[in-house]
Image 1 (cartoon, rainbow over the protein chains, first blue to last red):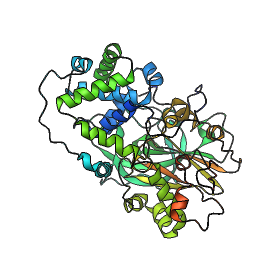
Image 2: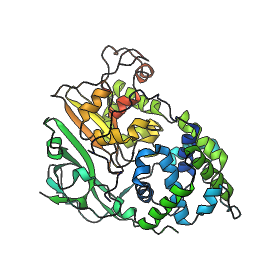
Image 3: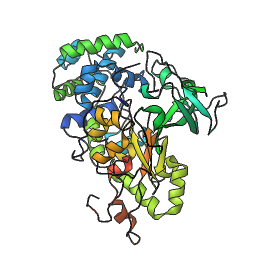
Length: 218
Length: 216
């Protein structure tokens, strides 16, 4: 979707705060939200669905509210949508029904093991042969569907070169709609001068990891 | 059940906008209380996750990987060839690193990592991403004006140095292998690790200092 989340190359954003203190969390609630995301999710969500729910946040809120606040909003919206709780319950901060009997899957005394258990793999074996090899010239598609996609606006309809083939990975666009389909995925290198009208330096390049259906042969 | 219906979510977001307290801390508190109340989360587990990413899981892991690559050519070769196996050998494989790639800075090449679509980051080796990495300013500008972004971080690149910006749009993640500072030939792996900054592994720092604790 052409959402406000698709920020690459958008102009008018100011300088970067390079003086930020290097701490994991800048407020207690940020740590709580990070932690909730690690241990409490609905089993029917996919990672790409969660990302899509986040990019559907009202554009003004998306750009102006704190980062981990958007995680809270995403979690709350996705939980309400999946039927885990209701709007009234989150407004009250209290459950209207009895607690579910759930066996916790993570051991609080060994969370580092749970960090390791989150090494989720997205590569899949597929029968189709890759359509491209390293060095092939491609064009990215000009148009993308209205749902979740990982072809950023700035890299649409652009010429690039296959830098590497990484096998087949779960396709984000389908996964965001609850379907697991895998496609070949490639690192594609773009010359900055092909992406940006003002780019002059022939040494500047942008690398993107793109699924095969985002590409057409040049 | 989740129906994967975008319109339904947009509607819920609007309702939340009107009904939730504005303050982020109160929103998260309501979520945590409700999840615990429902039996969908446990306070002790949430506490443990906060602690893990405050102590154990952070950029010191990445710094260890970099220092080992600097001191052990065999490890460096394995790291470039198969970063996943290399970090797994150190016990650092985990969240968002099952498809990790390591990209090496040289005299001729500088690498910079961004996620323009959300905020993808190799959590199990770098911990929580800095706020600036997640801002619209960094995400919008890193792909379009990387040299300008680097200047704000006090990195001045000659025009003939190649800039490679890695926009992590899929499930691959990138770790920059910075250059080893000169004058560190005698340093132990631990002493080298103390020189490696988080930003140098994202690519917003280039010339590391040979003096521990000193910004370059």
